[in-house]
Image (cartoon, one colour):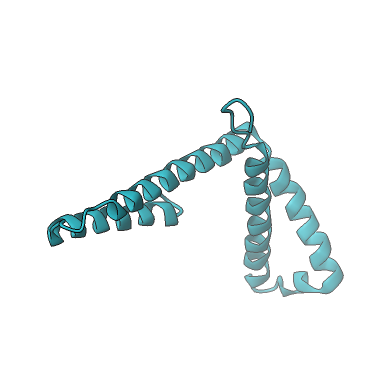
Length: 122
């Protein structure tokens, strides 16, 4: 990090790799679940099939649209993390004389911010 610039290249690449890993596992599991395709789970064949799936999904994951998706997801989650930490700070900054309603409102805001951060589809 230099001069206020944050480089998220590695984070985007890690998100892409994680996506590929999960996609390969999901697609392979779905293929093996199809009646008559259980032979795909044989040791040597499963290695080859997973390699092919990984190559295809890996190529697709490097497209501009997917990289934009990964970047957008990271930026959105970073923003949600800031919202959550701000909500926690606001709740902790409440004076001891704060009413139960004020405390409850800040606690609710913190939980809403946490739910947004923790969910994948927000």
